[in-house]
Amino acid sequence: MLRRLIWALVKAALILVVLAALGLLAYAYVGPMLFPADFAAPASEVVKPVTLEIGQ
Image (tube, rainbow, N blue to C red):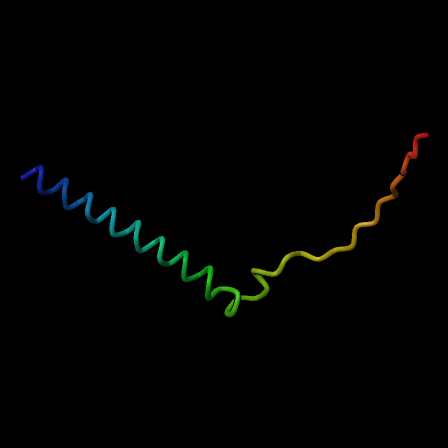
C-alpha cells in the first residue's frame, strides 16, 4: 500500500513537471505576441570615450 502511494506521488510529480515544461514552452512561443512589452529588449544609447593606442 505504501509502495502504491509513493508511486502515485511520483507519477503526479512527473505529470506536473511535464505540464510546467509545456506551459513554459507555450509562453516562450505565444508570449511575445500577447505581451510584447515583457519580451522587448531595453534600448538605451551608451556613449563612452575610447582611447586607441597605436604603437610603432
